[in-house]
Amino acid sequence: MMTTLAMANARGHEPVMLEECISALQVQRGGRYIDCTVGGGGHAAAILEESSPGGRLIGIDADPHAIRVARGKLKPYGKDAILVNENFKYLENICTRHGFSPVNGVLFDLGMSSLQLEGAGRGFSFRQDSPLDMRFSDRQDLTAADIVNTYPEVELAQLLHRYGEEQRNRQIARCIVERRPLETTQELARVVEQAVGGTRGRIHPATKTFQALRIAVNHELENLELALEQAVNLLGNGGRIVVISFHSLEDRLVKGFFRREAQWCICPPGMPACICGHTPRLKVLSKKVFRPSPVEVQTNPRSRSARMRVAEYI
Image (cartoon, rainbow, N blue to C red):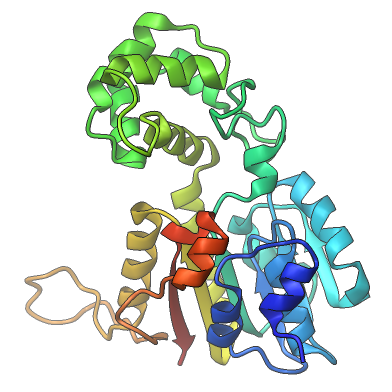
């Protein structure tokens, strides 16, 4: 019998930590699942395969191109796969519309897909020249070009530090302001490179700047916090929530949320008595973060920074 990983690879897709996801979700026949970042449909296909017969899945993605690709991937599952082109911050509303609760598991794979990184004209990568866009959906108003060309220097520096953890944020912001308007990804990458004195090491100096702009354009951290809260509300008893993140900002947010929802009291430190009335809703299934295997990292280098956390509804 083919493993879920072998099936996914046979279909030409490399979803990150696929075997670990299926195991962590405890996918069961006839279960209901949500893939909040359906992307190319690799995780979703494996979940539907494992939960058949009778399994159903809602796949959500803000990127309309991803939904089109996933629709082709998941066509064999017919009405068992419901695809929705919306941001996962509307998770509860989406599930209410489709009568889809409670659910057995919710998955967030927060990594950028190859569809976005390699897609022409999206502006997510500096490896090919394209307009400074970075929006997951063209229904959004704010673009990376808007931020780069209109934000005051101080605000731009703060954004690079907050969302990119860029220690050279001030000199990069200063250089951007001096050289603007900037219209394309490679223009911006060259400016950042010049600001920090050229390329050193394996990681391009513009990597953190591009991360910060993408997060800001798409309100990624704010939307993730909203969606995590809603995901817990949708879980049935024993349901699992699995999150794969790819940088420390996301991982810290997820870790903090899981830890908070596993506690009896979340009052500020120093309170003489508990007044919050909070009760635990989650059980964190491992204190340590799960990482991809060395074999996966070798075959799929994009997985090397993946971190998976798992919690169960109680």
